Length: 231
Image 1 (tube, rainbow, N blue to C red):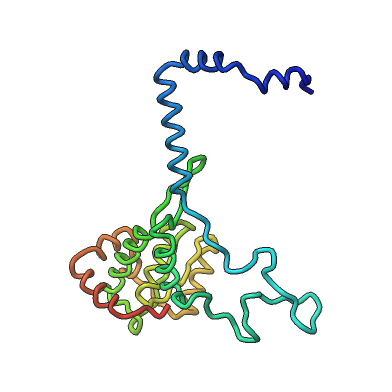
Image 2: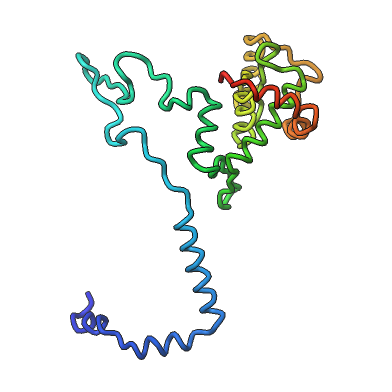
């Protein structure tokens, strides 16, 4: 442990020595320290603030009456099922739009490569890419009433979520084809959903985003966006 005399000396630093030490620091070093301090202050002032939870995180469930060890969510009202939490977020599409508004176009989808920091796409960027992709689906004849099923074959990555959001935006049905399940599982899903995956029906996402950004698809997008999504 430090002696009491040493601790007392530390309480009364010689201001002249401190001033001399600061004067001996080179100008580039002082500029660097100032830049780091400014960047830290800016980050602390502008970083996204955590949204308040919808319930007490320490009491998220309560014991059901007349049962042992059976709990129900505190969000439930009576015996009815919980359909939504916010009035303006009754569908997946509305939930995304609400997230964009509440976060003020904050970070939406994050990804990173091994041993590298996260990179983030904003809500507006994700929405724009989803609308481009959904417009391409409409351009190819998909709609809520005509061939609404969109199969997604992809690893877990932002593009998966963007494709799923494109389906929500245009009231289409997304069907996941997980590559980790193998070929037999994928063909089983196709068979059960009565899909006919033939030549020309397998499309590449990046090309479809470019197609969806074209003039013809943009007109379809405008017509669709005038009608609310049901998903």
